[in-house]
Image (tube, rainbow, N blue to C red; front, side, top):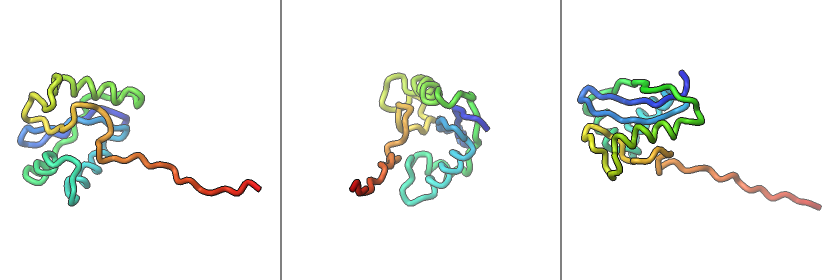
Length: 116
């Protein structure tokens, strides 16, 4: 599957919108996070546990270099400038299409080199 904007849709009609270069792999990462001790999105985790596995829906296939731009367009509709989504069935916590705050970019390890 190619890069895309996707939705995770629960039978309760609650949903989460995201983007990924590999939506199926990202789905598995969401599942793993939801059942961890500290899920990255507690609302998503509660829905997953209460209603079971959501359906992965591809909303739009997008070139990888346009993923965040396209995801932001979807989030702009859902949040409309507010801190929380206007649609109460939306499980997104962040109105901005960027990596979650829980992801830390790894800094390269510096190694000593002897220039003798």
